[in-house]
Image (cartoon, rainbow, N blue to C red):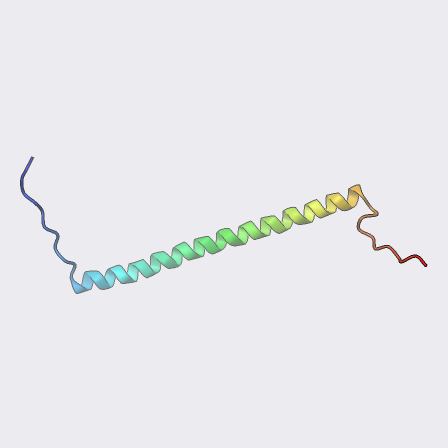
Length: 71
């Protein structure tokens, strides 16, 4: 094992600028992936809701109808 302590050199201006640009691109990709996941989730939820409502309507045909007020 060596007793040598490695010193970290500060990044150059070009390296800092490149890091900023790449970071923005990474964030954009992550957000677009998140957006796609959210859209898929909501679409699936709406599909399942429609299927549930259709099953409930088929099981109980009177539930979906509005009753006329009796006089």
